[in-house]
Structure formats: structure tokens, C-alpha cells
Image 1: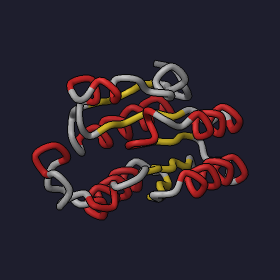
Image 2: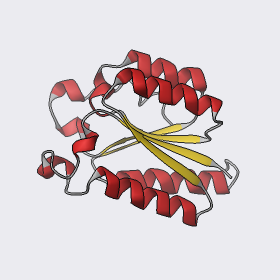
Image 3: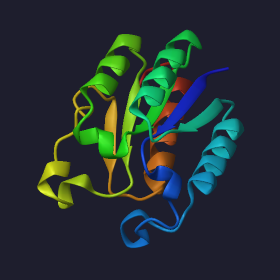
Length: 150
């Protein structure tokens, strides 16, 4: 069974209450439950992990390599614009990943316009709310179901 890891970065544990006009009303638990259900229906194993700690996210990425995770959906949140070490961890494990942002980082403050991940990601989804996670999952399922052929 193909394995997918969803990684959520800092402050995403506050979804549903944190700036709902920017981040929407869905909670992180609601998003995770939806993703797990969709993945199971397609015959995939999906696990979710959230941390406000850069070190914990690095450990989760390293563990994904050990656990033979096939794909990652990653919302690096505020680390998008600052974390070379998370980028290095993703390069080290060489697991394909899709970068997801709930808000459109390119329509926000200028410091949010640069991502340390977009150029190494399989794809980037930005500004589509929680639906971005589902679109990333759908893309992975389709790609894996076609054995990597688009």
C-alpha cells in the first residue's frame, strides 16, 4: 500500500480560529479526517503530523525516509520563507512532495512571496484554502495509480 505523509507547519494547529478570513473555518482535525478518508477510499495509507517546531518537522521528514513514505503533502506555513534546513531535509530523503498553502502567499506581504520549497516541489498549490490539500492528494493518487505516468 502506498503511503502519504501530510506535514503541517507552525500555527496550523490554530486553524478554525486563527484569522478565519485568511485561513478559513475548517479545523486541522477536520482537514486531516477528510484527507485520511479520501486516501483510504483510494487504497492509500495517509498519516498527518503537525508541529510548531522546525526540529520536529525535520525529524518527521527523516522518519518518512526510513518508513518508506511514497509522497508528502507539506504546508510549511511560516517556515516557507525561512527554513533552509527543512529544504535540506526534503532534499536528503528525496521523497516527492507537493507544497500547499491555504492562503495565497503571493498576494500577501512581500516577505511571504519567496518559498524555499517551490523549486524542489513536484507542485505548489497556493490560495485555495483547505481544498488545496485535497487537490494535492488527488494529484498524488492519480500519479501513483498511473505508476508515475501523467
